[in-house]
Image 1: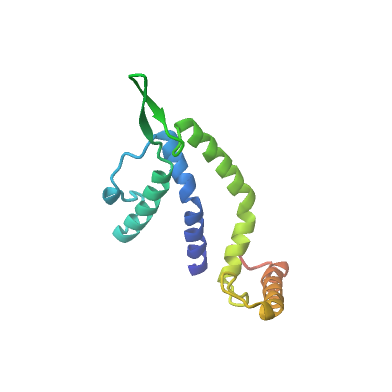
Image 2: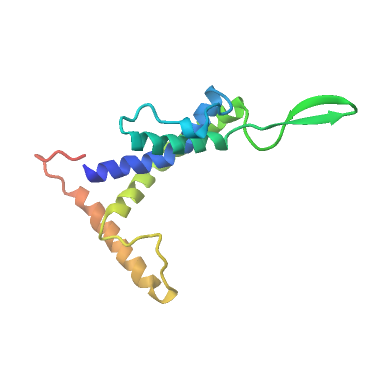
Length: 159
């Protein structure tokens, strides 16, 4: 159960940007102060604040900014290049979901590799003279993890 929870957390982290795009497409510019944003779906106060904070930042990155531009005495409100309109956010959200759908099987495999103690941490620094050994150990660990699923027991329920 612990490993499944860790996979859920990794999936949440991967999809905060999509959540921000969705909010920008549906609601528009962020209209909630940072300190007050809590995730209403969470029962735990701590997780509500942590997830709310992540979601607030994801939505805030999509915020469209407007500026005042003067042209011979006429004031016009223009959009500055940073930020997104609702339609831009909608298109980016659709593209993001399609991209996630294609990448998800590989992401899940990478996340499971990160959980497996047989596979070295891929984010650590490896000196050049140790690179071959590191790659060999990584290949063998991934092969061992993936070969477990080839021999399924008929009476065991796999998740």
